[in-house]
Image 1 (cartoon, helix red, strand yellow):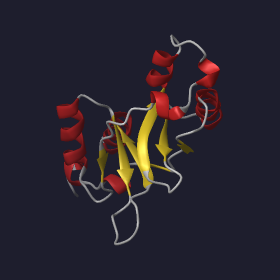
Image 2 (image 1 turned 180 degrees about the vertical axis):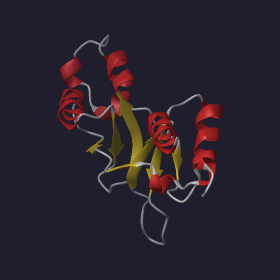
Image 3 (image 1 turned 90 degrees about the vertical axis):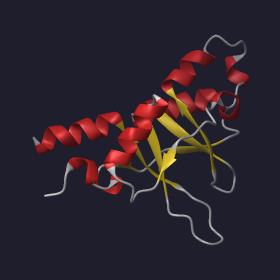
Image 4 (image 1 turned 60 degrees about the horizontal axis):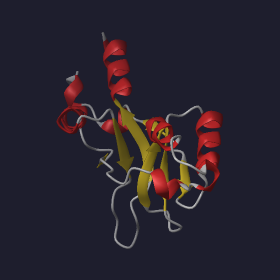
Length: 136
């Protein structure tokens, strides 16, 4: 049996990343978070390239801004994205999370000639903890 740290991210990640275009209103983003029961959304360009990520924490920070109804996703998204490939190991992901003090990685598709990397999943610290608990 493989050690937990050697398992691949694709075996643990949450598939089906919720995405929205950069120009969508923040109000619409909050509706998507609530209806999809997720804590964050990947923000993409019109071409589908990932530009950033909006988490519930980003929404909370934006609440202090005036004219909330005029704020768009691009205004509040975090563009400091940390991503990983689906064939990386859980050990590698855990090390990145620890070093960067984050609890979520965006899993991007493999880069192919002439195509953009697309978000295909998310890996959170909770996903890893759940996997360890199921194995124990």
